[in-house]
Each structure stands twice: as structure tokens, then as C-alpha cells.
Image (cartoon, rainbow, N blue to C red; front, side, top):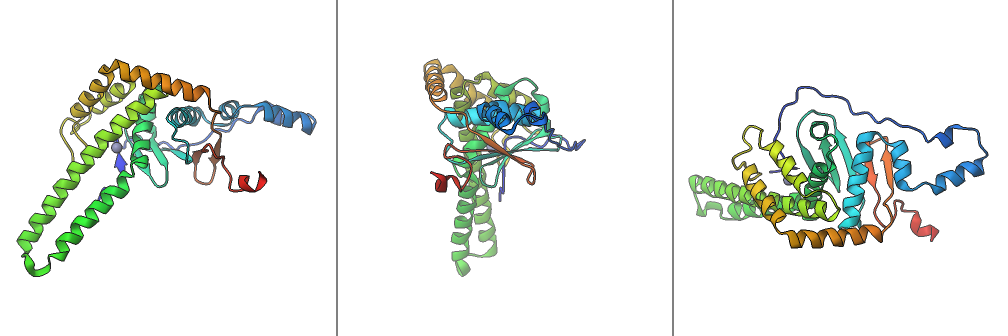
Length: 283
Ligand SMILES: [Zn+2]
């Protein structure tokens, strides 16, 4: 039941373009300077400088978005992992430990619009922080156990009716969690200084997809989601307080570093505590 959460509906898998990482080495590392000079240059680079020269354009943009969202919202207690998935579909996932998967098709629809991507990233962060997959799974298991415990007290027809009722309750719960993830994603993006309307632009694209205008088993109708975001946008005072709060946090914290894992083809954005088990021994 609902093994992973999706922000949107499947569109089409027409082409599967392979996702490759372009590594541009910093110029300093290619010239024959004395080692000490190279080290001095590298140590003066911020994580942003290094990321811009090392990562592909898409991963660099995602790093800046996730890093900013994490810091502005105080979500940097655990590392976030980001992966661009190669299928040309409009979708994003929250799977495994703090992994945010974004389909290439989704990025392609919003070139030059980081506010949309920030809203989607925030939505997937919410699923992780709210433990939605684990909660839905546990609730379903509890419900099934209660039905099974009735044993011979009920006949097969009654059992099937109870299972159907459980399924309806689970779908209702899933739709509620999706709306909460939208709310969280919106708030997180606004606090990080992204445009409030980015969430609306993302949802407007989804509203063009077949089936998006009615409730599905897991998601509310896109019209319901748009109305909820419009209500949030209308509260100007609260939005202004979030922006100010996020601005203060960004100004008083250091950029989070990152690591690119060639093996997993994943970007890992380090938490405030740093990125290595060995750091503890070096202090
Ligand atoms: Zn979702």
C-alpha cells in the first residue's frame, strides 16, 4: 500500500534520456602550480564555488535549492539526498532515507523557475519529516490486524466490506497528508525566499494532466490543492513573517557542503553536523 509518495500523476514515458553528470574540474586543479598554492585556492572556495564548478547545471541548481530550503527552515539535522531520475515524466518522489527523487521531465518543464522546483522539493521534504510513508504503512497494518482478529466472528462478505472501508479510510488519510505536504512545501519555499506563486505554477501544470481534476486514491484533486495554496498566499502578514524569519536564518548560518556519489549517482547535502563519521574523532 502506497510504497512511495508522488507529487503528481504519471504523464508519459516517451523518452528515457540518460542522466549524466558533467564534471568540470576547477581550473586551479589542472595547472602545474605548487601544491600549497592549489590548497590555498581550494580552501578559500565556498561550497557554492566548488559546486558550481563541479556539478552539472541541474544538480548545481538542486543543491542550491535544497541547501537553502534546509537552512532557512532549520531542516539541516540530517543530510538530504537528491537524485534526478532519467524518465521524461512529470513526477517527484520521497523514498528511502531523506532521498528526494525528481524526474528529468519535471525539471525540463520549468527551466529558469527555481521557485516551482523549491515548492516541489519542500513537498517531498514534508513527506520525510512527517514520516508519511511509515505512518500510512503502520495504519494499514493495524487496520488489517484488527480485521484478522475478528476471525470467525464475521463471514467473508463482512470481511471484504471491512477491508474496503479500511481502504477508503487509508485513501482519505493519504489525501490529507498530501495537502499537509503542500502546505509545508509552500511555507518552506516562502521562508527560503522563493516566490509564493511558484507552487501555483507547478500545480497549474499538473492540472492539465488527465485525471488530475478529481480526487485519486492518494492525492486530492489539483483544484483543491490550488485553492489551499491560494488561501495561504492571501495571508500576507504570515508570509511576511516567514520571509523575515528565513532571511535571518540564512544570514546567520554557513552554507551546507555537499558530496557527489558517483556510485549511487546521487547528490548528498550535508547536515550542519558535517558529512563524515570521522569528524567526531578529529575534534
Ligand atoms: Zn506527495
